[in-house]
Length: 131
Image (cartoon, rainbow, N blue to C red):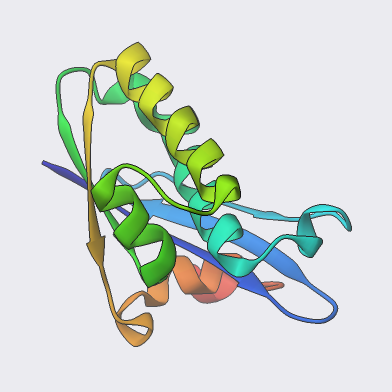
């Protein structure tokens, strides 16, 4: 089982996301003006999608545990569906990626304070704190 921590942050002047994988790979990004308008649960789910798009080719026939501190997306991902269309679109994308990379994703909630690696990557200027 591989493990990936993801996080997204949304503040009045900055929105960003990031992930840190057990294999040592990581990435951070900032969201543009239109993406910042999305609710935080969508941005948290988007971080999972980005991580899967980036790392999925390494996960052939593997189980990958995602540690997420947003319960709305995490619980929807465990169920595999959501009443919120914005989350359903992300879950469909993840399903497609799982078929493409032949992997299984598990979703586990993690307390925000324990998610410090990915949290640092989602903040403005957070890469030095992460490193």
